[in-house]
Length: 212
Image (cartoon, rainbow, N blue to C red):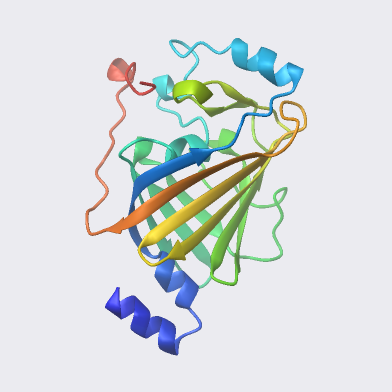
């Protein structure tokens, strides 16, 4: 933290330096689901025993990843891109900072999981902002009361990463007029840690507990 503070005092890379490091989930908040009739019907169809993508070692969404209990993530910033490694399912994400890209022309940020869409990233002041579109239909969450929240191919999301002290807040805004009457807003707060990410090592033969 002292090194980061010194860097921020002398460099325009303050925001990037504050984000770099390993973070551990500490708190989750979420607003009401605000489902349309079609959204409620779609959510009712979800069966956590068979429909959780994690049963196939595949993440349902970035929201699902950052909402995973006891999870970690690591952020590394570079001049032209940002890398985010998530402990859950060993997801590794690379985000270009090229301002000429759009969510139609950007590459998939996780090539192994193209259903997660195409993302563009930029810095707004001290915040890292990620916009994603081009999803395949699926679910936003597979956890607890929000298990089965649906996602259509029209969904657009914004992830806003902001740091205050040793806390990283990830504000997630989901817009999908097919299934939601207004934006679905959720937030995950992480704390800085000296721990390291461990290999998740998903095993298809033992994947039935990933949605618990």
